[in-house]
Each structure stands twice: as C-alpha cells, then as structure tokens.
Image (cartoon, rainbow, N blue to C red; front, side, top):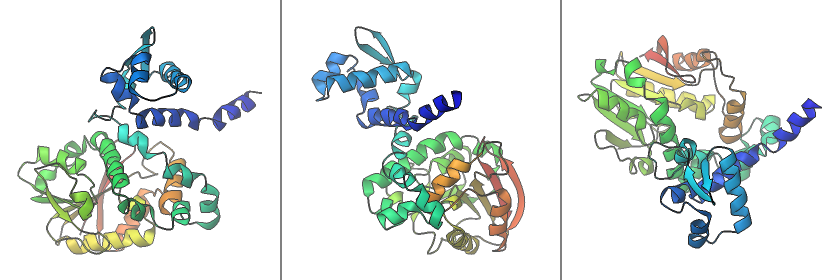
Length: 321
C-alpha cells in the first residue's frame, strides 16, 4: 500500500511547481513585498477570483513561500523573496523557464525515446534556440534565467582558475556575461570579451566587458588567448558540438587555452538521467562524461591538461591548443 500511496503522490507532483510558477507569473511575491500584503489589498488591486486566490495563498503558506500573520495578512519568507521579479539575486526567471514549451516537449518524451529526435523540434518545427531567437521576449527571459543560475554556479570560478595568466579571455556563447563579469572583477587588466548572438549582446548591461556579436557555428573572432565554453556543448548533438569546437580551435593562437565547463556525469555523485532526458526532448542532445568531452575536443587537436571541480554539478576541463 505504501507503493500505491507514493505513486498517487508522484502523479500530481507537477501541481506544486505550476502553482509556484503561476504565483510568479502573477508577480504575487512582488505585490506582497510592495505592500499588497493582505487578502483585501490583493483583491482590491487585481481582478482575481477570491476562492482560487485563497487556495493559492494557503498552498504558499503551507509550503513556506509566505507567512500568514493572522486576519489574512501576509509576509514573504526567504523562499518567497527569491521569487520576486525585482530581486536581482533571485530565481524569478528560472522559475518561469521550466514551464510552457518545456512542459509541452516533456509530454512528448515518448516520441524522443522512439525516434532519437527532439520532441520540441517535432512540435514547433524548429530547434529550441531558433524558436527563442524568433521570440524576443522569450529569448530575454531565457538568458535572464541562465544569468540567475550563473551568478551562483560560477561564483568560485575566478578563485579556482588563475585567469591572471591570460591577457585576454573570451566567453563564447556566454549569454548576458555573468560568468565573465565575475572573472573581470578579479582580473581588472585582462581583456574580457563576450561573444554571442547580436540580439543577445545588445541586452548585456555589464560595462567592463567587451562585446562582440556573431554565431559560433559560422566562426569565432581571433581576439583572445583563452576561450571559455560554459554549458554550451551539452545543448548540441555531437555533430554541432564538433563544429563549435572546430571554430574555437581556429580562433585560438598556438598554445591557447580552452576551458570547457559542463555537468560531467562521471565526476559527480548526482545522477543526471532526468537532466539528460530534458536535453533530449529540447535539443536532441545529452549530458556527457568527461571522457566524451575530452574525446570531442581531442579530435580537433586540443590536448587535455587537467580537470577541476567547480561545484556540486560542474567540472572545468582544461585544454591546450
């Protein structure tokens, strides 16, 4: 009977995330923080259904997103505060990222398993990143979500790697530049170049890093003695990953350094089966072992030097040209 109870709970587990996601879409956490901190004020300022709102507030209270102070007055907990849109160190955009198209693609996981193709691509008739590029608001939200993760995930990167040995460093496919900005803060004299699509580069707010627009499938500028590829390769199948690596090789000078940061399945104790399935449905890709990444890089003349642990998930693989 315990197994049956666990299964019944599993079947509706996604309701919890979707309830929190809805609260973010409504910017409920921001509203409570900014003064709409009672049931009456929320109803006065928003055309929301009383019963549904009460149910949502009860769920958020029970699961430690908000505190009920009595008489339907509310305050945010630490967890709820992280989901405010205006909290620059929070996870608002990350919360939004995993709903919508992600959920639709996951509902067709069976198709990916049967065909080896991205179910997202089969549904939308374009790759995930082509879809984002065709939808400016979704592209912004995606990169904001990735920046929220990056601020935490890469905070120790400048302490683990001595980037002072390089006069110039380029982050290829670096999004809004959160990782590169952390490096620049510790290496003021280094030339730090962010390379990504023009429409991404235009949204970057960091003033101390140089920005160059382009497409890493078409070519990468020869302007740096070190290149960072951080969680880029896992978005692509082997054929496309090889094209990125080929262009990185041509962009680097002799003895240049390539830093590949990825979730290497053989370097961590966390199982990545579900994350790898997510890559399959979204990008027709998968999480790889360090051995697989090293093999890909060595095909183009990169020589593996060493690996360093970045955090619980990511490993830094260091190569020389």
